Image (cartoon, rainbow, N blue to C red):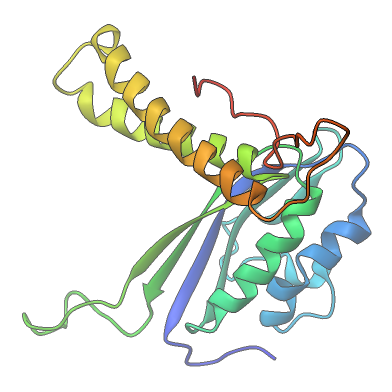
Length: 207
């Protein structure tokens, strides 16, 4: 059911590249935690944002992309709906993608608030992808973009190759640790007793 006098206005923003074989019914099922939270009976009904100027939730069949610029009134329990949605989107995605979620304090008025009052605004970044390597790739790309944008205020972009290389090194170490953790407890495979990497292929740029 719709939530009135909810403490937050929650905005979900991002674009997810989907597999070419994904159908509308699959997307509707994957996004069910969101549109049900909004009190809708279907994705078509729940895809509209609380703000008319926002495009809401759209599925581009030509590009196989899911685009979200969607606001719903809600509370902290919305995070459970987000977790369920991300698990389902992982299975439909063709590559890693970030999703930005912002919780705006609906009761906070900056002009009328006392100096000691603080807004309960919150922000979280989620990532979806078909496998851990794809998710790490999306995390890496976003971090590189953020770091370069910040450092280009002080340095020329051509000077930042070493910084990017260090970021790649950190993600490479994290990826190797993940692969090793997936290998623990696996029985040997094949005559030689060796086993392949369970974590999938290494993300691009991570050397």
